Length: 138
Image 1: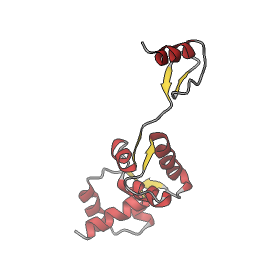
Image 2: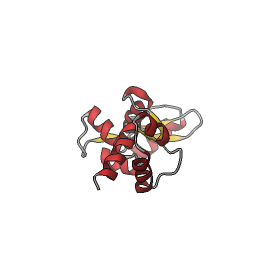
Image 3: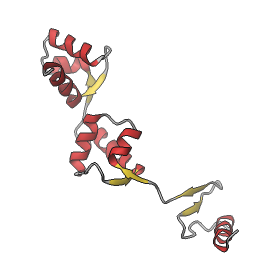
């Protein structure tokens, strides 16, 4: 074992929380790496299964390029802030959006079939509008 590895083990065993290598000892004895992995925002979107509408809105708000690299924590914080209302996003059932946006019954039925939506599915207004456009445009 190298001197550095031994030093790290000693620091952790002695409760020294920061050994300079990004490793800390938590109170329960678990060891974690503070050097979080950075990935592109597009990679996080795919890995965390973030819908296109939400991702587009968050990307625009934060002026992210597709190749911008951030940590998972940073990505999740931005998505959560957007979904909690900082981005003025409201989720409603598709039936509520139909009524609020005065969607005609035959168009609504077509959108539901086109998207494969089940009754009471909740979506954002952006998702609903994109589904309408997708259905009407082809």
